[in-house]
Image (cartoon, rainbow, N blue to C red):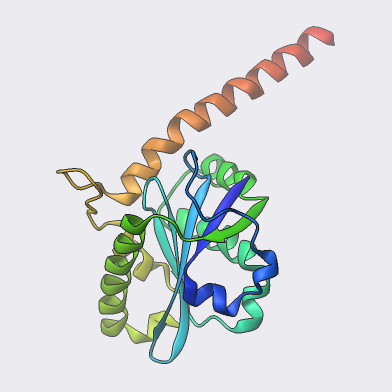
Length: 191
């Protein structure tokens, strides 16, 4: 089960009854913890979603309050679109979609991730100011600009969120492939 940790601005728009996850950051693995932050661009609400381990991020622009009723759906659809545009394999997209079926809401806990998100927002706004016509279409080109940024998180060397996301997905896909092969082998032996 994944946790979507929301900023205070976003929690003010959401009903707090949905808040289930605790405020403290627990032991979570890849794809188990996502962050969401509300920001404004040209008086339009925008949401930045960031995966906590790889910092793979995307922005959904021109969000209405009624869209926030299904914020988990926004996360699932947005990550699928971002991964498709970044040319991830279909199996990887399906795996991430299955991981994000059950999403709980929580309070943003890690300050270093929130700092990285603020930097990503700065770069996204810069790209959006150059191509304002692409913002309202939620053009993936703008999300591509933040997927290619090197980020420094408690390391001396920067990581590239897209590449890190791909690296972390490979073992998960291999494990899932092995399970499917074993199921096929059992099925073939029975029949």
